[in-house]
Structure formats: structure tokens, C-alpha cells
Amino acid sequence: MQNTNIFNELRKASPLISVGMLTADLLSLGSELKLMEQAGVKLLHIDVMDGCFCPMMTVGPPLIKAMKTPLLKDVHLMIDEPLDKVESYLAAGADMITVHAESGMHIHQTLQSLGKMANANHSDRGVLRGLALNPGTPIEVIEPVIDELEMVFLLAVNPGFAGQKFIPSTEQRIIKLKKLIREAGKDVLIGVDGGIKKDNIADVVAMGPDIIVTGSAVFDGKTPLENAKYMIETVDNAAKTCNKEDS
Ligand code: DX5
Ligand code: ZN
Image (cartoon, rainbow, N blue to C red):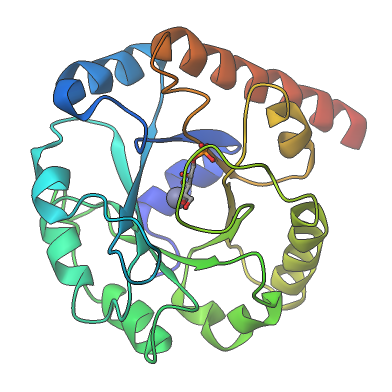
């Protein structure tokens, strides 16, 4: 299922932001989502935490289902043993599902079964499968599962909380991941998640990821619309600069 429609859409739009909803105003979620649409955001990053894989508990399938939006739902599962749980997130409308390499005994099987499942929003859109790696997990863990995923998310913070600081070794990890993907002859999207703010997003774009998760810098409790626009514009400009330098 490498070439799902979502994969092609994202490959074309890369690099782009996925806005983390963790610090959005959940009691005004409808209007927060509208602001993201207005800003031109394409992906909503929804952090699911179960209080076991990481200490906090956040949202589950009912809230994801309640989010009425044309934006793609990029669901990041920070939950233990996701194998039997992924189906309910798809049923709730997830377009992209990321599980953690550290979260279960059956990661290959989880990705494999996700590859056979349909997108509940549009059956022809496909499901984009992601694998997330904590900052302390070796990049090589993707080798045995590389045929069963379309995206790898590198966490640039330890999972669990918004507003942390970007871990600098992430840059070297992106380089290593790109090399591994190239040598495997695959086309896999690379995401970076955590600690990406206004003052470092251009530097992160220069590291070459496709999807850049930014949460608390957008939903800062003040000006989410302006913040999202700023992030999109900065990513577009930084990408142009990188392309010029490459050619
Ligand atoms: C960390 C989450 C991230 C994070 C993003 O556990 O996966 O998505 O909350 O938020 P910021 O941008 O505030 O680091
Ligand atoms: Zn996340």
C-alpha cells in the first residue's frame, strides 16, 4: 500500500506543517478547526495518550469523530499495545495513523493489518501508516518494517507533553534515517514532532523532513490563525531557499 492517495498528496505538498491540537481550546474545538482551515493548514496532528505509554491521558476515538473538518487527521498514538485499537481510530476518521516502535510486541503485525484497512472518510483515499521513534530509539528499528509503512516520525522531544525543547541530535537522526531509506530503495515520508516553534522552524525545514508537527507555537492561547499562517509561510520560504541551494 505504498502509493496511497494520501501518500502522493503529501509527497507533492512536502514540506508542510501538521498542527498539533494538544493545546487547542477543546471547548471551542469547532472554531479552532475553522481557523486552521482559514490559515491553509492541511494536516491536524492529534496526540493520543493513554496514561500508560506516557503519563498524560488525552483524547480517544469519540473526540476524533466529533472533529468535523475537511483537514486530514494525522493521529499519533502514544498508547500501549496498539494492535487491537487501531481499527477504532480508523472508524473515527483517522487518515494517517502513527504507532510507536516502542509501544508493543506486534508492531509489524499492527502496520501490516493497518495496510489492509480502509479509510472511513473516503474509501479510495487509503490509510497512511506511520511509525514513530522516541529520541532514544535507534533508527535501525525501521529496517524490518520498512515494507509496511509510508511514514516515519522522529520525535524531537520525549513523548508526553507539549511545549518541550527540540533535542538537537534529531538533526543527525534525520540524516541517518534518510540514508537508511535511500539504501533500502524506498520512498518514505519523514516527519519530525516536538519542540518546533517560530524561532527554529526554518532550521528544521533545512534538515529536510516532509511533515513538521508544530503544536503549542500555533495554539498559544492568543493568535492561532496568525501563528499558523506564519508557520506555513516560513516553511514555504525556507523550502524555496533549500531548493535554490540544492540546484
Ligand atoms: C509530544 C507530542 C507532540 C507535541 C507537539 O508527545 O507528540 O505532538 O505535543 O507540541 P509542541 O509543538 O508544543 O512540542
Ligand atoms: Zn505528536
